[in-house]
Length: 277
Picture 1 (cartoon, helix red, strand yellow):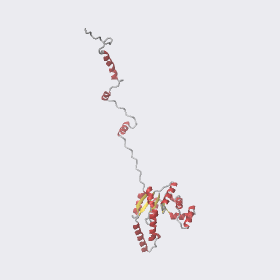
Picture 2 (cartoon, rainbow, N blue to C red; picture 1 turned 30 degrees about the vertical axis):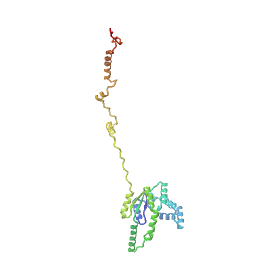
Picture 3 (cartoon, rainbow, N blue to C red; picture 1 turned 60 degrees about the vertical axis):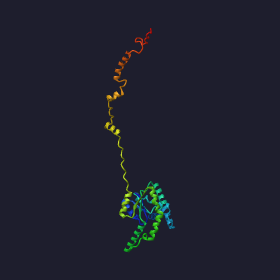
Picture 4 (cartoon, helix red, strand yellow; picture 1 turned 180 degrees about the horizontal axis):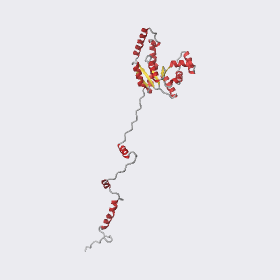
């Protein structure tokens, strides 16, 4: 299973990603971790990224995509992965789709954790107060100014990915403000594969069904029923039938016995007209 989690900082992507890792046996791939790993390994892509990072510049999209392409071919990523922190922009998403297509792969889903920025800020403020009450050091992400800048960056750069993946039909939106367990359940429902409906065979037509029943198990055609006497009388007997042959000589004899009108019975000539005398 290959997934992407979208959502602003503090939306709970890391927590939900760990649950998905445990449930599906996949790996969580962080862009930062992959970059550092490639630099340590001294790969060609890692050396390119090292030079860019040394100059304090952003790593180009093609370099990041190349690092992701190398990482997903490793054995632990065979069952799938969750991309964390990538893609961040629409051009990166386009490059990712192209790379996956070249490898004969595709994303199984993109989950958006929808949160309210105002409520999210309150959540972070409460976490800061609780940490201070316990005497714990604050996380860098908990700094209000840092959080505000990260949310603005997400709104400007990453939020357009929602429309991009919605247009592709792979986006599933989940209420990220719900409790952790409810969010996890909603994600599982969004990723569930719908069962394929069994194909319904069309009902046989009445004539076909009757014919099939009359044919029987051996598939023999039924004998044609004999014509009734009334039906035969309506249509008339055929010339070569026995009744017609029997009546034909009698009809000819009767015709021959009748003399022709106005003709002599002997020769068949017309009889002389009587004299007026």
